[in-house]
Length: 179
Image (cartoon, rainbow, N blue to C red):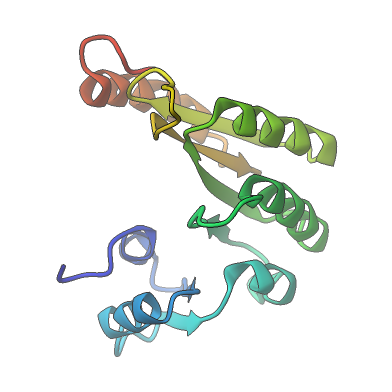
């Protein structure tokens, strides 16, 4: 691959001239690839660091506005519980921030427990978005993707109401997709 894949590259291309991007990557080889892709970019700082640890130390940002995008690797057990706990902690530190937490749709019971844990946080403005491309399977396998957005931009829900059905149709095919 020529570029480090994923959200940091997309986010960088959406920045305005006054914005900055702080990209945190746990895996050394991926952090190095990300640094190489952003070498010389004064708006972007790449740090080899566990993003979970950074939620406590990097918030709130000096600008007092921003988006925290969390894209966990789901390589360890308990990631959903960790996400709910970290979101609650981050929201206490910076209640006005916008947070977007990605998650895989693989085990419906784990997602249900996550949603229940999020409701228990008492965070008032949470938008849950999900896209499926097939029904759940046994044994469990990835059948879709989800994102929880705290303090979402006011147009996001309406825009996703247009975009997600189209993506479900295109990616799911034969009526298997949903949103």
